[in-house]
Amino acid sequence: MADMTNPYHIVQDQLRRAVANLKLDQEVYELLKSPMRLVEVSIPVRMDSGALRSFTGFRAQHTDAIGPTKGGIRFHPSVTADEVRGLSMWMTFKTAVMGLPYGGAKGGIVCDPAELSDAELEALSRGYIRRLEAVMGPELDIPAPDVNTSPRIMGWMLDEYDRVRGQNSPGFITGKPLVLGGSAGREAATGRGVVFSILEAMHRLGIDPHQASAAVQGFGNVGSHTARLLHAAGVRVVAVRDVNGGAFNPEGLDIPALLEHVARTRGVKGAPGSEDIDSESLLTLDVDVVVPAALENQVTEAIARRVRARIIAEAANGPTTPEGDHILDERNVFVIPDILCNAGGVTVSYFEWVQNSMGYYWSENEVNRKLRRSMVNAFDTVYRMHEEHGVFMREAAYLVAVHRVALAAEARGWIHSHPEAEVPSAPMQHMAPETVKT
Ligand code: NAD
Image (cartoon, rainbow, N blue to C red):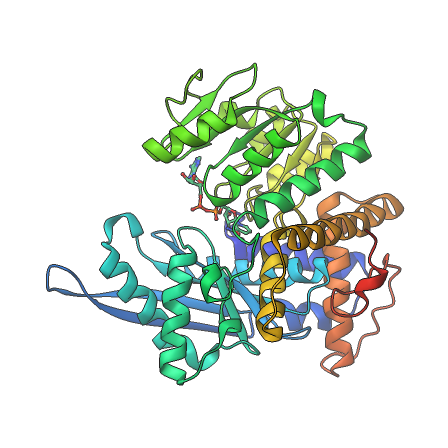
């Protein structure tokens, strides 16, 4: 019996349904149901105490049908093989729905970075790359930041790769510091993409952003930039929450003051003019948009029954359980699915990798313009699928993504099926950018 809080089982189920809906051959499911490679490593670290401690790390590479695999690395105590397997598959479908020339990957280390000193964190980051560099590279598998990993960690990882290989390969990793070839606009890119997709959804649903309200769960990289940019777009952000507490003001939070408070205290709790709020209350607030931007499995069946928002924008990966999803569909809540909603990060990672290979860099305005074009274009493709085929937005995103991966697998001669389903077409990023709508 599949465990439906396990991301690997969830994404397999989503794949199975997309293959059936697209009337694709079962070979497509057989080919894509598991990552092509999963590596588990043990990383010894000399701790500050002098003791040796070994950490477990993983890297899952799902499929390279469309291009080299790509995906973040997370540092978290709850990382498991199945989690990275599932997340690597989501990355395949995310890059495919965006039309990026990549397949999916994900990595993780089982650790609590809050308990590690800087020196221990650096040793662990470098050790992870030494163990895995043989199966990684700019044309093979390209890592990036995820939960609890940062540009600083990407800088250490890049340096370790360069030292081991005896070369300088800025395109090995994305989300790195600007001075090492990072892209302008990368840090805020996921949140910016979330906001572009929310504004598109509001436009389709006839919601005026200046009359709208929002609540954001999670205030890390993704949640904080989402809240900041929603506020800048005129949306009233009434509640935010991180792992230690919340900030709620029905009149709207003063986001610039909140950001200063977070910079000072490292948490949102106690922000000026706010009261505390728990996650369940936040997710069920009477607002136009709820943005889960923390971890998986937050919108459960019970929460989904009580959601009052018109739009759920899935900034986190897998924030809705399959049961929750079913209820949201039944209740006609407009879900912007994770593989579309939070794809701004990997899109600007792609721009970073392109700039690295050219050795020529774009301004932040240029990156943001290109990101907007990509998000609007992908949203439009998925929305047309949703309208034309009468399917839920998540189903629509999977139909677009799985169809693209199946076409690539067929073109390589891996499968014999003929994916002829009627799918709204949109150019892949690397095929015809001048035809992409602005
Ligand atoms: P992060 O580590 O910067 O922030 C995570 C935030 O969630 C923190 O504020 C933390 O306090 C909060 N949080 C954790 N548990 C919580 C709980 N139980 N209740 C409320 N808040 C809680 O991570 P991030 O990079 O912002 O990633 C968040 C999500 O977005 C993850 O699902 C990640 O996979 C996804 N994502 C991130 C990126 C990216 O570019 N960083 C891209 C795509 C998707």
